[in-house]
Length: 189
Image 1 (cartoon, one colour):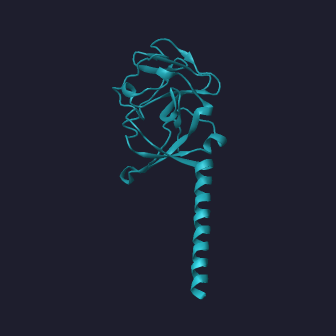
Image 2: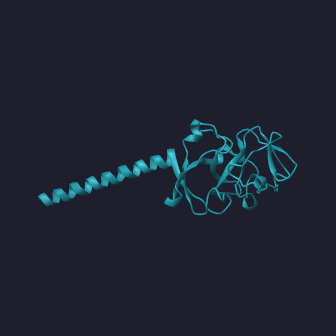
């Protein structure tokens, strides 16, 4: 009878441990962080195809999103997909493109921290060159870092706040590429 009690206790403890681990995972996944796999080259060289990124969900409830933040959001043209892009224009900003450069409120945006000097930004179906748009409340204007290969707000328009899944903050796979994701417009001094 002792062996049956031992087996029963072992199985009950194992089941409780499994339920506890699954509960903790679900709480973290639903309320705090979500994994996201970069699919494509729209953010290259900042993010490479196949990298896994941890996305912070709780940040959306505690802090405002800022220019330079990299966000994951539901694709406006395919709601079952998620995109990863950099916030360029905030609510109330006027965004325009002139001679291959981005302007915010008529001032040239310094993108040297994440774009090579020879990268140019040209218009698309939504934002055409020399035709400014103003970002509405609770919306963002986003662009990929690989401008020639990115489908972004220049094509599909603004991203609504409620479509934002979270702010990306850590690349965790592959291990050789592990790194924190920093906003180039926020000083850490």
